[in-house]
Each structure stands twice: as C-alpha cells, then as structure tokens.
Image (cartoon, rainbow, N blue to C red; front, side):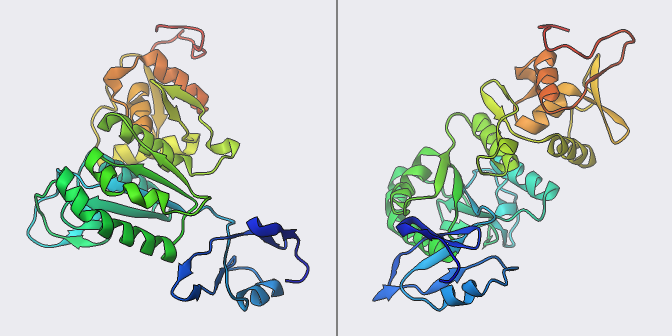
Length: 311
C-alpha cells in the first residue's frame, strides 16, 4: 500500500480507516478478497484488492448478526412462508416490530430450527411441530456448525446476539469456538421475558461501545439503551398497531402524536417488561433518563419526581 500507516499483523490503514484481517483457509490457499467503503475513491483500495493471501475488512459500519431459536408458536397455514413470519414467539414479535419501525436496518437474522437446522430469516418453511430435543441437537450439531462457518465466510459480523433455548444452544456450541478473534457475541439468559428485554435493548442499542448506546438507566436490572426518538417511534408504532394498554393510567401520561399514553405502557413497549412488574415512579424515572417528560392529568402535580418514591 502507498500512503497508509502500518498496523502490524492486527490491522492496516486505508487513509484514516483501519482495515482488519479476517483471514481463513478455503481450499489450498487463502481467499483473495477485500471490502472497502463503497464511496471510497482512494487508489490504495485497488492496490489492496490486487493483493493475495489475506482478506481485509474495512469497518466504518458495524456488521451485526442475530441468532434465535425457533418458537413452538407458529402462524398456521399450509403454504410456505418466510421463517421470520412463520415463527410467532415473543422474540420474533420483538424482532418484527423493530424491523417495522426501522425497515432499513441491516441485521443478519439466523434461526436454529429443530426440523431445518440453521436457516436464514427469509427461508420459506411450512407449519410443523418438531421440537429440538437433546438427541436432535446432537444430530444437527455438525450440520449447523458447517452452515454457520459458511455464512461467516460469506458475511462476517462484528457482533452478534444469541437468544437460544438450552438444546438449541447445545446444537450451536461448536460454532462460537470456531470464530476467529474479534467478533463480540452476547448470550441472553433467563426467562423468555428477560431474554426479550435483552434482545430489545440490543436491537435498539445499535451495537458498539459509543456513549450513544450506553444504558440511560435500568429497570429491574434490564439496561434501557433506546434513544428518545426510538422510544417515541415505538409508542407511535404501538398506537398504529392497536396494542393494548396505552389508556391505562390515572395520573401520569406522555403525549404521542396528539394522544395521551400511559407512562408505564410506554416504558413497557421500550423494555419488553410487563407494566404490572414496575411502578409508575419507575416508569417516570426511566422516561426522564430518555429525556421524555411525563405530564399529569391534575393541575398542580410536579413532573420533577426523581427524588420521590411514590406518586
């Protein structure tokens, strides 16, 4: 390369953008490939792409991948439909809702199925009933690992989130150790409600370690990483979809598109935690951290309540 700075074996630079090696064996030699920003007109890009023996990835935007276990609950029907639409468990509802609010978000979504193994979100499937037993996980493990490495070679990711049941996790256990150093994988644990909350935090957090994605606050141990704009977009989407509960308030509400919605309902939409599990004071604290002001139905109520424990 000309005009670049050396970064040793861990990376090189194309102008000010660091190129990180993601090399792996493919047949007798290394794959010859290069990924550069689409808008780059730096002549170093062409020189770099003509090199051999190593694959380099420029990473101005973090590539993200999501791995979910299939759900027992499915949308019925005899005709094939995309897996992301067929499965109807809580995590899939959270994911579909996120993609409706942010349709241009490019997250690779992969699903571990007791019948089909590892499949992409758009893979057409019919309705079926085949749970992932411990024996089935053992049968599918090699197939899933091979499929995982194939998708990694085609579309390497910088970070991933995995929400998997016990047997599904066992079916993928050799996948993570096969990854080269670098990618960060977050594993959700706990009840399905907790895993949905963590998934929502990861989706709306956007990845990375910037201050913009650090938790604004926590609710029952779940980090709240959504921005003010994302929270209000979720509320607007919930109203459009007719989701239950926005009018369930006595005093404190948030105005959204000319309508009054319950502060607890809004926080539940953002975190995935049922409104019955926290107090209105908790909801107001979380919303205050997001920069969203709660209003009172009754004149004389103060909205500055962070030091109050009860309404």
